[in-house]
Image (spheres, rainbow, N blue to C red):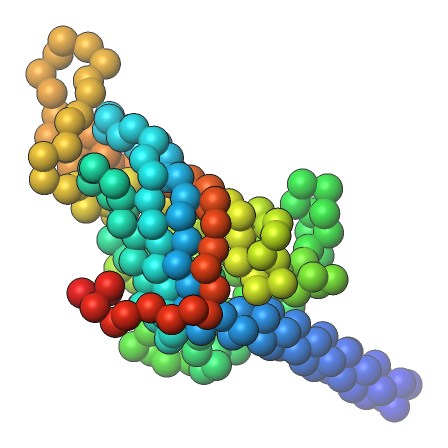
Length: 231
C-alpha cells in the first residue's frame, strides 16, 4: 500500500514537472517569434476612452527598437496614456528570462482555446508582481495578457492578429487599466454629468476604467530606426 502511494506521489510530481516544462517551452516559442523583430515603425489610429476626458480618435505613429525602446506619437493632440502603460509592449512582457513559469490550464477566448501561463518574476526588485498570458498554442501568439505591478496597478492587453502574425505583431491592441493609476496630462478637458460642484480630477478618475484601442494600419519591420526618435 505504501509503495502504491509513493508511486502515485511520484507520478503526480513528474506530471506537474512535465506540464511546467511544456508551459516554459511554449513561452520560449512565443519569445522566439517576437525576437524576429529588431525594430519597427507603424502607423495607426488610437481611440481613448477614459471617464470625463474628451479625447478624439487620432492618427498615430508607433516606434519600437530592441530591447525595450517604445514610443507613440499622436498627431495634433495629447497622448492619453497611463503611467508605465503602453510602453509595456508585447516584447517587454517576456523580455527577461528570470521568472518562474506556471501552467494554469486551458480557457476559451472568443471561441478559441488558449493556454494560460503565469509568469512570476524571481527578482524581488521587479515592479511586476505577476503576468498572466493567454497563448494561442498553434500560432505561438499572445491573445491576451494581464500584468499586475507594484506601482502602476493592473493592465490588460487584448490582441487581434492579421498580416503580421508571423512576427507576432498585432493588427489591433486593446489596452485596459484602472484610471486611479492614470497620470492626468496638463491642459485636458474634463466633462461633468451635472451642474453640481466638480470634484478634483483625481477624484473623478478614481475607480474608473480606462481603455486605449490602437488599430495598426501598416508596419515597416527591421528597416532600422534612429535612436534619436526615442528622445
